[in-house]
Length: 324
Image (tube, rainbow, N blue to C red; front, side):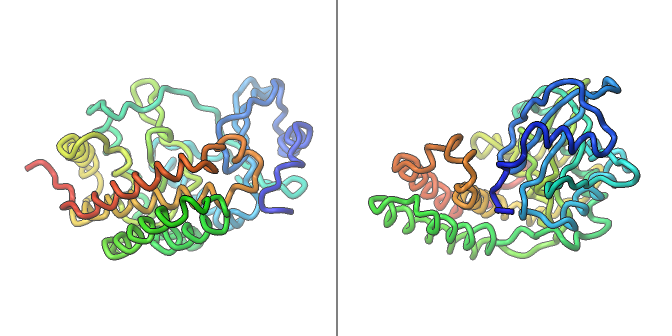
């Protein structure tokens, strides 16, 4: 099966796959926003709503997916509010005609408010609880955050895609290579724990005065600050206040090494480059040119030159400090 092939994942195949594990949809399939995998919501004959996720072929091994599932289930057992896969006869990962899939309960809620300090403190508390569980053991099969994957391989993917025009190649690669070198020098090894890995506002729901963490598809090993820094926005003083608020809740459950504050901007730079590499790698999937058409335009690469220059400047600034 081709790495990018979802062509055979027809509605009939999806329904047959779901029914193969004893769940019988009564409603139609509502496609949810997911580019990496294929995700659908439906209502079954038990009057419950579910979400089914079909994994992108060749992205994760069975062992890596099952490790993610076990992590989610261990968090649920510790009463950390995450959405974990549903077990059927002790299994969470299923296969049907070459496609691997998982079932989740359907959950709802409002998007997390990044400028709400009460919600930020609650989030810090939840992430502290998550990290307390995460630190009890390590992943064996999931990847680790590192500069080779996030920077060097991403650069190779961008060049291999041939989406950079001759006009933009020199200015873009000049600042990209400068940023990569600066980031590699600034990023350092520190304590590694299991992480949510992609903890941004889009993966946090607010419902019934509680927060709910969703989508552990990118969980991996890395520094604890990875699950905190994406909540920071605004000027330096605002970021310091937001981080201080989160850590007030976080440190009720897990200690935090403040030396990791020096990793915030390197991690931001790594995420920027990795995102471009991800788009380039996935360009063969028809969903990507259709939804990210701007990625192949000179205007986009011009904007990235400016963004990378700004991030290079941020790497030269002193690390963020907490409010005394």
